[in-house]
Structures are given as structure tokens and as C-alpha cells.
Image 1 (cartoon, rainbow, N blue to C red):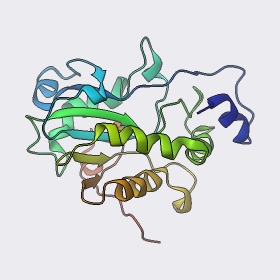
Image 2: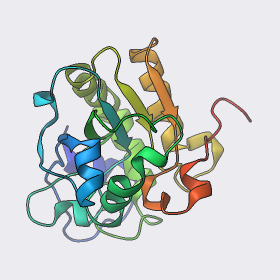
Image 3: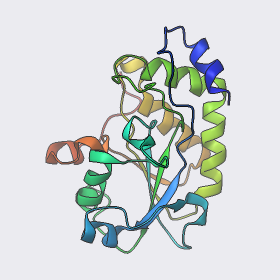
Length: 206
């Protein structure tokens, strides 16, 4: 994927410079160990995950803090909420012994380092159409194993029901892994609020 070309094709006026690195998918430790210290125990390439079932949390795209130092998914408040509340999310209560894997559907900074209401959705949708979906599917085929608990926790975005980012990602997961258990949950940045982490968003309804 050529992120410069994607940004140019998005029909926006981007900032003069923006982050060009990819944010890698990562295995970040065992759920219970993460909860015990309130942070990710370690960060390793996702395909090096342990054998056996895992929890795979799928986000839409990395923002600003994910590129502080070495790029990594779910830094800052998002990561802290995952560490603290993951086993309080319906469907994930009994996952303490499982490894946790974090994946961004699009690995580039679709927000271009600005407020998420400015560029993120248009750049994400352009990236998705310009090879992003295929790239995500290819990465997930390397990571996913039968028995994994998939969590589609992408934001819905700000472009309305017809262009929900999370719906695009969820549909792709269903197509690639029709027998998988795919949970629909809100973005972890709001998991500190009980009603948000317990909410199951709707799919395929107008």
C-alpha cells in the first residue's frame, strides 16, 4: 500500500507532514498478567503468538500515541482500558488465561495526526478500497487460529450508518472466518464506562 497515494486520493487537504510508518499487529501478553499490572506485559509480532486460543481485539487505525517511540497498537488511554476492563466485557469474562493480540484494520495513521473528525474516516475508507481490506485479510489469515475470540472493537466513525468503519471490518471478518466467534463491542477508549463496554452494536440493520 502506498499511503501517500491513498491520502492524495482521499480528496482532502492534508497537513504538510504526517506519520508514514505502519503500526504493527502485536501479541501483548496473557490477559490475566496484563490485568495484574494494568499494562501490556510485552510487545511481540502478532504471528509469534502462543499456540492455543487467543483474544484478538481489532481496532480501526492507529492515532497519535501509537507512534510515540516504536509504533504499537493501543497505547495511552485505549491500552489502559483494555488492560483494566477486558474481562468485564461480555463474552470475555473467562479469558484470563488467554493471550491477547491487538490488530488495526488499517495499520496507517488515517487521522494524519489531527482530530479524528477531520481526516480519519475519509482516509480509512480510501485506504480500505485501495488495498486495505485485502491487506487486513492477509494479515488476519496469518494471525487467526480456530478457537480464537475475535472482538471487532472499531469505532463507527462519523459518516453515518451507510459508512460505519466497524461494519466494514466486521463484514470482512465474517466473510474470511465464517465459523469464528466475532463479538461486536465499542471502542476500548470508552470501556471505563460500564454501559459502553457492555454494549453490543447492531449490524445489518437500517
